[in-house]
Image (cartoon, rainbow, N blue to C red; front, side, top):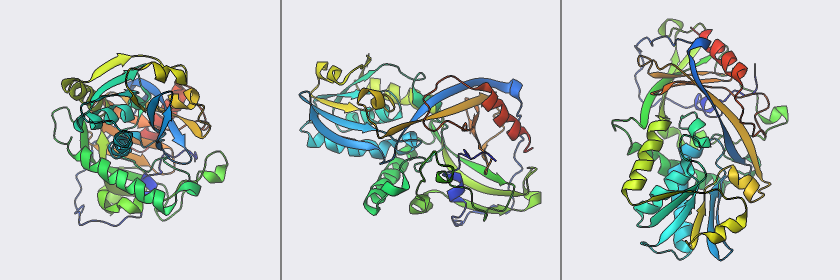
Length: 378
């Protein structure tokens, strides 16, 4: 059993109660065609983890009001809108008035949603970025709504911090609902299965038990009403080779479509996108805008020497799309998550040394091993 099981959210939700959902006669799911010759892409991105949680704070620096907004770990897409609302409050507190042009640095999930949130509040926005989608770390994200994924270390999760996190998660969830039903399907609900070798009452080992990662707090119970859960299924109610399976329902982001839509909306509302690389903090002073929102993610670690940030390598792969597969799949305790995205079956698996690594070279052997584990479930 690999300790990188990618189930910080999935395992926690197993204990949540049902919410009146009837799964008495589930439709038999189509089998996933899992073979290494169907791998069409492998992508690596870096999650910007901060033990203290995301940095959302303002300072006066180099003649600017600099609002820092980065460090969301594995929860960038999931928390983005609620987090952007907090960053916007700091922009407003810094004296910027609607109609004024502000700068946003970074074109990942946090940068794009911050730019759109500012536009919706009446600001003109110029977005500066070294790269744009799909050449940003957010493009490699899994796409499952996991607002509690590597977001904070347990030692920093005070009651006040947790309450703020819950508010951000609920605000983000509300905005994501507005993207449901659109033709490109940027946000969709999908049913899924958690499959396990042993009963779901068996605990999984904590990250901290292995010494390289901090322990993470249990946060999912705070938003249990946003994650409807089904019951555990009998052996004849699912097609998997493992004895235990449970249904769940979760939001899934079709990230390429979501990114494209955000960029289109940003341009439609007068946004400007400027390609620029920031090599030192003094580069902020050269911008014409007096309010700058720093959404550089892992880039802020080196630029600002943020010693509290740890890079966490994440590798995802896509198999040839299977439109008939409309469910997600998590193999509990075996480092495997599969999502039915429109751009292909997305397979995610952590590597043994990914925490603390900013290595961007794809590891095909890691992906092939995950695909073979997937094949073994059918």
